[in-house]
Length: 284
Ligand code: PMP
Image: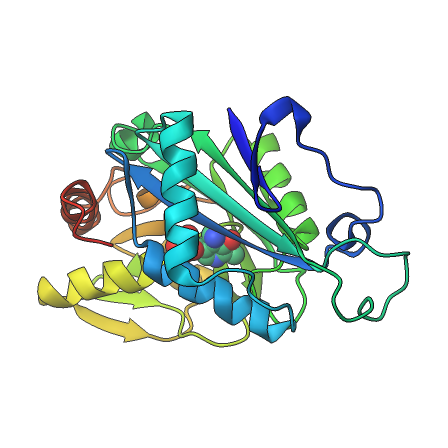
């Protein structure tokens, strides 16, 4: 396994980050995760556009163009021989003596990239559907930035793990914001696909955009609006999306069955269509 670290491909065991890295000291950095399916990157252009947006939002200069990033990601996936899994990118504000304001101009960012082999296509959880719990959303007010400050999600997802479920849906003022690492969707009893609109309150999911486009093509009515936990409990179907989970059917929320307690037909179709496009390399 290889790590791309500050311009070099180095063996995993030899990749080291200094103690004074601002990513370590302040979580002062941005990350991005894209899927690899059938050896091909999925929706990489959109993921890199989000990386660029997040870096701009915290004033870190993007070290590479989108084309350069894509070449590096492909090279890494090839070196690691990953046919199915994830590419993780992290860019921090670099290494400098610990002090809150930005380090001196010219301090190079720290750039890290690695892959994780992971089953995506035939994930058993997707066949049976998964359980989620709801937890309070404890995060800051700029959740649209894909910051590596993930403590609230660590605690939310640990609570989910402890409860033996797959994801935590975070709740603010009675409304579901999103999953700990995914976008939350419900399908109402009158067949409307509902997900929260984009704002500072949620991360703009890349899978979310692709799935909404597919839903539009399938003539589903889409409503971008807030929804409560109570509405979710009464939904006909529920699912969440992310680069790694793709479209994951949710069959219980806080222990209560959604619909008939098995993955819903629209959810299954959205997953199948998305995976077919990814396999064909049609989600570049
Ligand atoms: N919301 C949050 C909080 C996330 O961490 C993620 C995963 N990065 C998502 C949504 C889903 O985003 P994507 O579809 O781009 O993976």
